[in-house]
Length: 223
Ligand code: CA
Image (cartoon, rainbow, N blue to C red; front, side, top):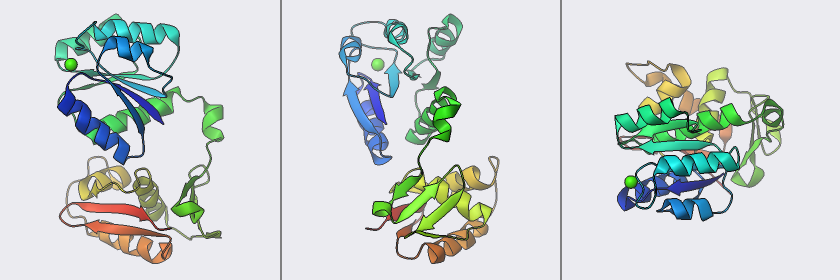
């Protein structure tokens, strides 16, 4: 997915860009409204409102007038958010500074799901990792390794699908528990280790669920 990042604050842009690239997004970074409007086509726009040349709200309106690319506004102040929402300038969602990359990616995924027409979602091809050795068909909730289907429990499937959303990214135990088990999850995470162990055995050497010490896990595709 091609993301146009419009942000004049270099440290924020740098960290966001690094994070997005780590999650497999292709990022074009520009610093001004003029550059944003001159940029090539994108699948998603992350738009800071406080730009050096023009008001980010005008950039948002202009982008919306041109087409239906999803726009997520990055806002520094609560009253800006009020304006975005109140004036209905066409943004699909917003995040407030300070934010984490995970939060931005969660918003992007939610927006992409909302704007993608159902026919398209049906046609979504299976995820292919590890040079095609590991294939995850999210519509059918089936996983194949080297052409053979894995017998996964529902939770094992959910866990693998979540890790495979961001191959190579370190996901914390808390993120995984919240996403796969319970959004309000609180307590021990022993069940996570049990499921990780089962998943490792079943994946064989096609992909490795690495332990990130003191953090959580990441899925690394072999091959
Ligand atoms: Ca700014």
